[in-house]
Image (cartoon, rainbow, N blue to C red; front, side, top):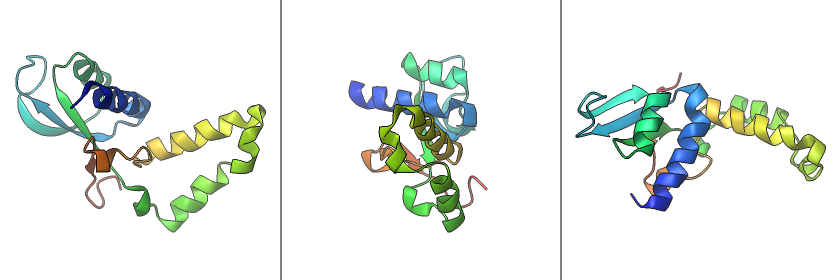
Length: 125
């Protein structure tokens, strides 16, 4: 993983911390964590260990194409893209990003970049 890829993934992981997504951890040397390859939920100590190059992490994310019709309606109801040009509506963008993070969607395209794993069906239900 390149430095730029690590930076992109770290930014994404930090945005997802409050939602504790499922992650695949690869640890071959850090004493503060179970050794080997295993799944867990993301917590701060994982992000910190990733930042310090102690472990490798890949989140399990849902492709945007897996969004259900109900989720699409919920997402759209959070804001009208036409109003985003007005700074007073900037909070709408953050509400939509929060929604995507809470529902574990890959809106950054990390799966095709190899920086995330596609979640198994029903993983987040």
